[in-house]
Image 1 (cartoon, rainbow, N blue to C red):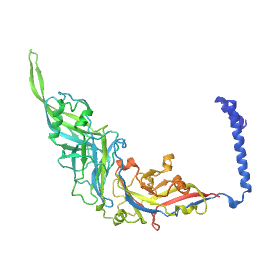
Image 2 (cartoon, helix red, strand yellow):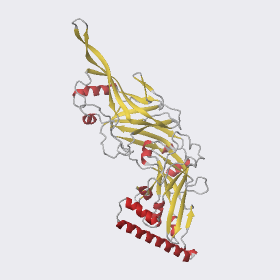
Image 3 (tube, rainbow, N blue to C red):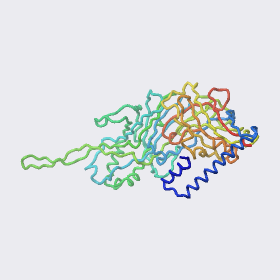
Image 4 (cartoon, rainbow, N blue to C red):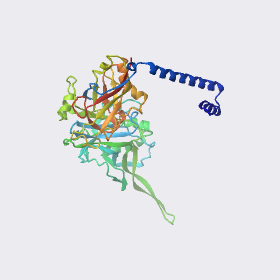
Length: 479
């Protein structure tokens, strides 16, 4: 059976009409003709006129570390539901601090009798459930946490950024609570072994005020409650006494976290016996009520103090001087640092005629000569991503990442200690004159940058170092 007969048989089984059989045959004839014509053309075309592929890795790259812009950190963007809290003095990157703005959720409606008769607050605890990662040395140091009640609510659907600050009462409900991070140690809660968590005792008067509002209507549903109690600002920014390479930035599972009021109230106890005795006496009942931190609006606030940086190389790059070439550059999450790359000689490749880019890969190597490149729990990001730069300085997603996001790589290779970013379409558009050559930023992908503390030291574009960043281009000259 011939190929054509076999195809006809298959198409017939699929219910394909004779029209499509004729169409398929026509396309096959045209394709065969084209292939034959191509073969004939190659036989007669002079070898000097044939298209050829070339390879270069000597494009000049000017690299420099710059401060990251603010990062969007509202809950609509951070679907993972993580919260970062803590302070850390990095031996290379300086001091970083992460704080949390969060609402609190009323799980059920509260009536005038929900908390019992004359409820009295015994204690109130804000419990933040640790997630496994913890940034910084594994030697834990004491930190101070403050919890302030917000004056304005967090509006669902609103975009919030890492630099956005919200007004608070200025009254510390945590009374500058001191704690030592213990992200892997289980705790006893009411005698029950529970997940590792940071338990922050809050002001009893605050808890009593919540109990007192059971009959005011402020707790009748979640909407009225969040209008009454706007939320919290949770921060460790006032922590003191940390030395270089001390402190931690911890990640918490906010959806599993909560605030619990422990209280007692007056109730009735009925006493009966076999005799016709039925007495009711007042008794004291001890119980608790749990407010959730899950399914609420929240956002992060990140701050970095680079004046504490002792690394002269990084300090000079962050100064306001003119662009210069660097052998080492730096990238940091939590809206910290990114690397700017410029390619001033890129257009030289088309001076002698147009070229077609087959593949352009930016190879980024971790500078493993740095003594501190592996000093932290989170040393390196799991992936990096490039963003183009507009004339006004804003960023845009490169065309390579819009069309084939699963093909552009960017993931860390633990064997070669490098990242490879495919930017073929971006380079082609610049060479074709359809996109300006303003350079691009290398940074950590947004969700990771906002939910995972990390940083990495990489080789810059300066030649003569074993960790040099290179743009590897394979291209075809067009005649």
